[in-house]
Length: 552
Image (cartoon, rainbow, N blue to C red; front, side, top):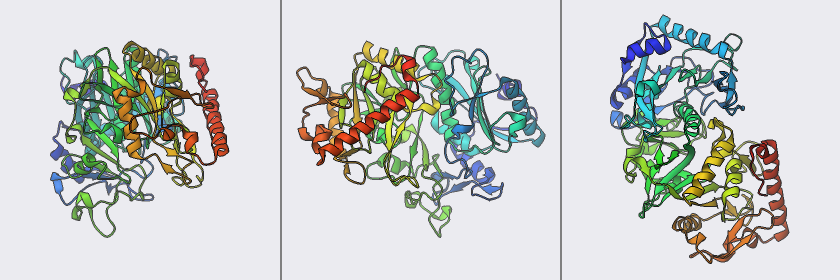
């Protein structure tokens, strides 16, 4: 179907102008010339948002979001509560009900706004997922060229074997210039992200220009569609070893998911979103959206080199003091500068990584890794998990915020995010946990809980696990040595975790967290407090009602 005709039928757009399928270099120039809006508190609505560096079009595009939207606006994210979806969606603070009677009038007001202004809209067509068993076409339509470039970076252009794409297509309409009126439009504020599963539309309106919205909104959709087709959608990285042994790594921000998956001896499938079907693993995207704050360029050479590549997007990194962007080499940007946000980001095509698996696909995983960064210093560096325990730790999704990272945070703070990505999980957590357990048992996958946090005490009183230790333990888990027949284990007396007594290349003392604390009574007390945090979260979230067994 012709794009103009399709958007007239789907959205009611009549008098707008389209810039369809532009190349990265064309989008680069359009963004600098036309992307305008607020970039600082109290600033004007027509300030420049996109900038070139000294490399010009041969380098990255720098983009600054609205100061109120430097991350996903989870409190303003909705799904239309049509009757047929009311009992199937996991409603929560990060995915609220939107009144069906209010949605279509809101959509019409937005399209009337665009038609009346004769807006210019950028359109990019792509797909979500590289496996035709579940892939869907995804059309981005929006006012900012930067967002169109982001969509082009992050999603495959075509998926061979995809049948009847027009009947499966999802469309995102991204309109920054429209301001919601909560009383009239049924929103919480003057912005909203609304998913309509019935009409296959994602509507983004108001001050919601963080690039990750373009990506995570459609992944919320995929997290609904895949399980209903018997596939598992996962917020995880995935890679393949020399023996074609695939692995998946779940983990929240700061646990080392991206760093540990970028192994020169293993081919990358994807670093953030993975599907697991009867064929095996496959990437849902075709790009990377990496966090930049405090980037160690030696530890992350791929991201460091991609900073200077054309077609990529650097988000919310300030210009060096006293220098304009167009007088700055990308490598000279201060990646420790959090004056705009701690959540500085970088979008680049997967092809920037020199070691990507063919077709971004692999077989069934032999190893599943749940990553956590325990800032309390209590969890073992590695634990072995069986079926029921996998479900328990998967739905808990534990890590910890570090003291000093937020104003007023003097002690570590537990963070629980179901399935390691609760805000964009659109089914109740047991749906994903049961699929994970079933697939794990069917394909005889091993599972470990790998702690990349602190050892010998809490943060501020002890050191973080050496990366060498973590990599050694991960290597042993991937090779299956931790699960060898005859291997000896002990059970943690408080946390009930199964801890190996030995691992090649590792001091056995390091495997038992209590052994490396000088004050054993202080450790026991800390372990008890952490157990209570797990128990309280389990009860507050009502996981027992989902059939999950408590493991602590």
